[in-house]
Length: 216
Image (cartoon, rainbow, N blue to C red; front, side):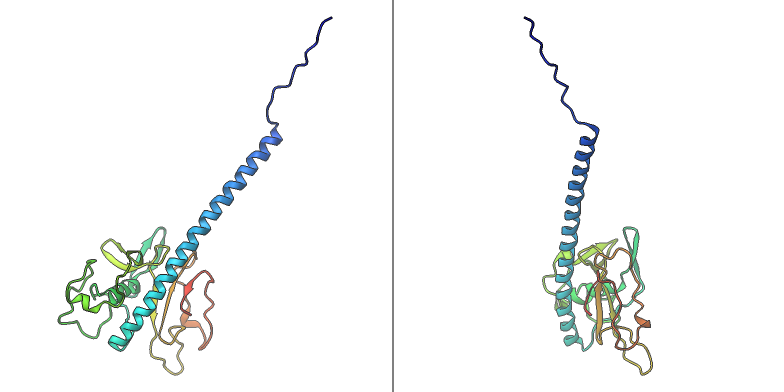
C-alpha cells in the first residue's frame, strides 16, 4: 500500500501582508522621528527660556548700574543662519552689555576712557570684568560667528531686542512693554523679522506667533 505525502506550499508573505508590514514600519519610524523632533524642540525652548530669564535679571542690573536699559549701536545688522536672515545687532549688543566683553555694539553717549577693548574677543581683562552683569555666562547662551559674538537662543538663532523709546503723545509705541521687548522666534520657521510693532494701537496686544518665546 502506497503512502501519499502532501506537498506543503512554500512559506512566504503575500503582497497584502508585505504592504501591512511596510505600513507598520513606516508608522513606527514616523512616530520615532516625530517624538525625537518634539523632544529637540522642547529642549531648545527650555534653553531659550532659561537664557531669557537670566538675561532679564542681568538687564535689570544694567539698568540699576547705568540708569537706563542698553540699546544697540547697529540694530539693522543681519546674520545668515541656515537659509534665513536674522537681525543680529541687538543680540551682539546684549552680549557686550551683559558679559562686559567690549562695547562697540552698544549705543553710548560717549566712548569710555578706560572701558577696555572696544570689540569682543571672548575674554575679559581687569577693566572689563568690572562691567559683568551676567556672571558665569554659560557658553550655550552666546555664539561666535565669523568673529562676532552675540546672544543666541536654544535654536541657535540671535535673540531679538528693542528698547522702548520715550512715548510721544499721538505717536505709536515702539514696543509692547514700557521698558524693552525681548524675544526669540522659538520654533517659528516662517517669521524672521515681522513684528509690525509700529502699527499696533496703544495698549493693544501684539498678535505674534504662539511659537515665539517673549517677555510680553
